[in-house]
Amino acid sequence: MAMWDIKTNLIADIEERGVSVLGANGFLKKNDSINELNKTNTQMLKILNELGLKTVSEEVDDDDDIDL
Image (cartoon, rainbow, N blue to C red; front, side, top):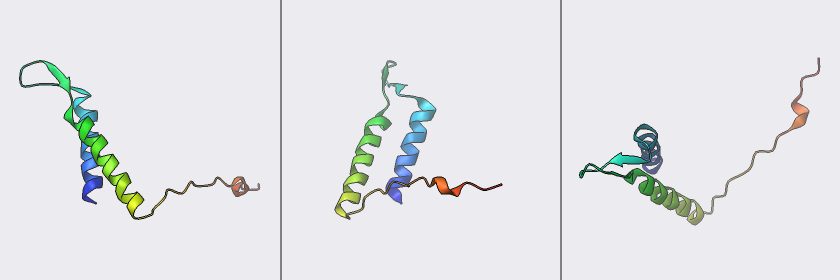
């Protein structure tokens, strides 16, 4: 679950600080969390692929209507 936690923390950082942050030189720069999020997500997808796991789409069943 460590990678999931890292991904969640990176998303939280981007939501909190935004896509641009103030750099050490006083100028705006790209938030490094964006690049790290992309790398983490790519690595997670590679792991899922190596394990042979695929996403399953959930089918919507219209027969679940309640008859009144």
